[in-house]
Amino acid sequence: MTKREILWRLITGEQGAIVRQFGLPDSSLNHIARAVQWIRANYAEPFRVEDVAHLAGMSVSAFHRSFQTATAMSPIQFRKQIRLQQARLLLVSDAHDIAGVSRRVGYDSASQFCRECRRQFGAPPGRDATRLRAFASTSAP
Image (cartoon, rainbow, N blue to C red):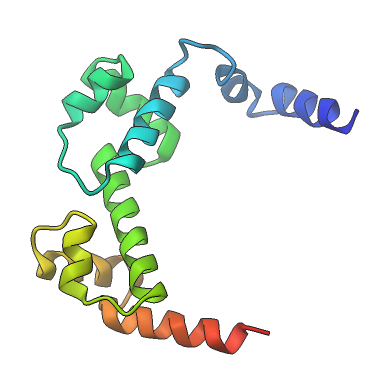
């Protein structure tokens, strides 16, 4: 009964039109979800947006517009976010070398990786990982 009430509120609420699109097999959100899933699985590999749009079954312009609406970023920005988050996880969870991690998540240039990490997280990757490890150790029970 509770599940039915939550679903009813979701589909009739202010975001209901968007939520209802998930149930449509040929909706643009389902196409974008397929593309997002592919990008997440292949984030370390180079890709052309045209190829991902084709994979999603959309024209390039419709794909860009729909992707931006669904994720609030471009496909390339989305991939960069995935790469940086994965790299951060690797650096925090294990003492990897920064150049090795940058290659592992798909960067050709360690210096480009360091610049993007600094821009995204406010510190170079090594210092950011050290800070997160310290925070995790102080907040652990």
